[in-house]
Image (cartoon, rainbow, N blue to C red; front, side, top):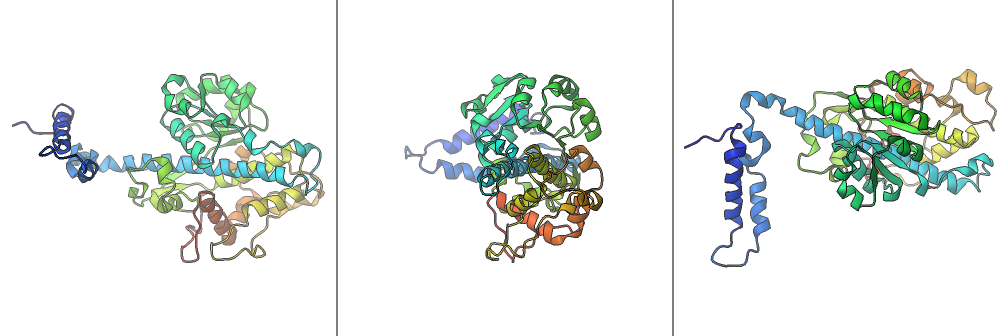
Length: 398
């Protein structure tokens, strides 16, 4: 009798499994097969059918990497979705408020939410997961989402949903407002050569290429409007990520969603908070591009991003924090900035690499941290109550 090991699992285990499933699914005594789904559910948690069963005991120490990889995928998609939601809502608010707030002539050119265009460079596993998540959870309309990849024919399912897939990176960049880089580190230099002349000053490049640091990316692209989330790993269990759930389903699970919060150490993966600073300075740049007075920008951002309460707090916004000018610029600069002038254009790479006024404000204000946590959860349709602790570390990683 042969022994089933990891090395011969494919030769012996797969045919054996097929026979087992066929036996279970086979009708007995010619009765209708009405409980086949239940029978398959009985097999779902069978230990011998799990991935870990074929892994030798001495190699199981590395299984945590599987959970970490899945956790990173979920966190990456969650944070990109949150970012796109903020930008989408900001553009909508600019349009809704342009008449009531008497915005300047230049600010009337702001794009409508339907014109918020997202491009993805790279059609691998991350690119496909990200596209599906943005499509359903922002939601970005299919006609406003495009993917450039060397093998567009491999993205048939996304094309059926109406997403345009092709291979021309420069065309994608000249079209999109936000460009997600989901390529391999070895591919990035050539991609940057292709796209850097097509980037507008207002184009936001969002890089998932962890091996290429921000200074190098800034040099390759000759561009400063870049966001790059960075993650560090704790010692907590990574079993929270749910091995059998798709990314979209995972982000609808309150436990998993709260674990992706910028201030949460749950799940063993922690987002460095400098990314959150970059997100807000990117929002300021959007308003600056429309020549919007900084006093109006502060009021708009406070109403849009700091008015989220606990579900049972009522709608009294008087207790909400409000953004001040010195939260984003130095006191010396603020003294010389008239009420009608816009914010300066911020270098997002410098924001994420250096201490800023917002760094100091964010780290010293638990109330602001709590409101941003509620904003994050609310953007995914999850409302926190007073009984639920706000997942804040108290000393966020920089």
